[in-house]
Image: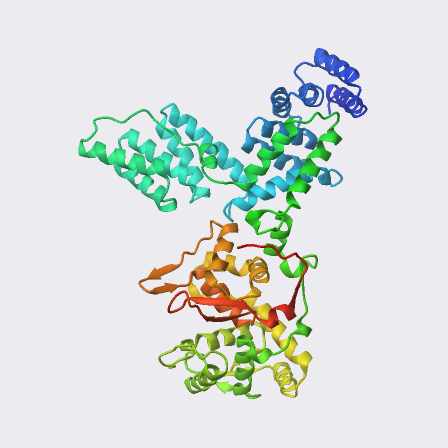
Length: 557
């Protein structure tokens, strides 16, 4: 640290002490002296910015001075944090979030807890980004996009193209970059590349009106219906595009900005305490779009549902009537059919056809009389048995060895204890099947829709919360879909309707009729409201035995 910086650091500490005790006269005097002697130093700009915020409540001047301080190389965590607040109040949301990110990056371990509100904001934004895009990449792309827009508006089309291509390389789904690429190519006269870019934009977002409008304009130009292109229009992804649809992160930031603008703060601690209190209130308040859950509760149900005892607890020892649970029934019957020595598998490594047919007939009689399979020629024809075999294998309970499928010795001993009526052995096996099916088995294996099935599976806590609220009575499965899509509108799985037939959505099929039913948490019946696969569902007694909820009942429909 040079001599001037060391002296100004002392002045900054004196300034902050004066602010803390409410001596604004002394605080102004300290700033005045610092600026007079060191007018271009980053610490002088920092003190002017903090004075604008905490003495004058002027967040515009605060934004300008603190930005200058950072550009001069003074980027302490609390400077970044206050700059972030000022940027937010002035409507510069991307700049604000980047400042919060930098505050957390350069904060010491002792300081990190003071910036909890910054972390909360960034988490809210991170949840809206594609999985592969980091916050750092988001900020870099934002700057690159804005640079591209500026170049486009100045008609430097070739340079703008390089910017938009750079964004699409890290975010292939960045629809506005494709739209703007199309505009650049269109004005450069390269109609084929322009069309390709517009079509790419519409493939990502069929409702992207600007791309559709420009595509039609280009076609009209080619047909001679118009003779020239109009003035350039650009839709800014980081501005106008966000206004088109609801963005929870942006909404809470705007609400906080509004609340802060109505307050007077006499110290840094007072402002931080206000922000912390606001964010805590937001995160702990029930929300209608989260079906009566707070953001904190919803996040815990989505990430660690079975490790959050404040929301729900599981007790596998309480469950009974396990032979009515499809996956458990299949596991027991398959283990019994394999025997301690195992059974020879087919050339493809599957269970033999006769074994599959025998178990299928019994399954049809005892578990699901409505199951319809034209013929069983191979293991995959009886898909539920195939899944059960996969789960037993994933769980390490059976293995294929020397051309035989056979239980491990410990598994066979467990099976024998179950046959002798050992309740602990039975619930232990069910716990293993439940955990493997819900956490380790790839649900997309049944459907091929990797992204959505992964989300259905990982959101088990949230879906079971809906079952807790609705499951006391028979409900059509579309009620569950409606509530799921209310909270997660971007994960839509539309119901397919044919004349006289309503087919369940992918969410209903994969999560409820496959996963939840197989592990014994729901029962299903043919719905009176539709034909074919239209189902009503309700919770089983096992659901209440297994899971105790510590959340209130709310009216959802």
